[in-house]
Image (cartoon, rainbow, N blue to C red; front, side, top):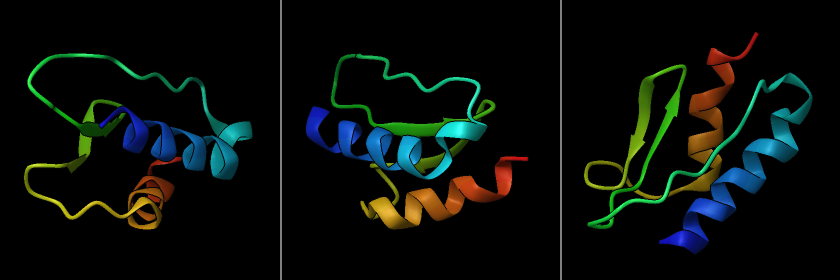
Length: 64
């Protein structure tokens, strides 16, 4: 799971790095993998198919 999280973080930083206030990975238990932007959940491995490009597309509208 860490590999997927790192892939998402790398893609987000490459695409939006100059527009981000911060990017963080929070390690936890039980295989939880969610992506949030300003507190809004935009990806959850339990309900969404893993696709880095789609996650990046979902983030884009949240950035100014």
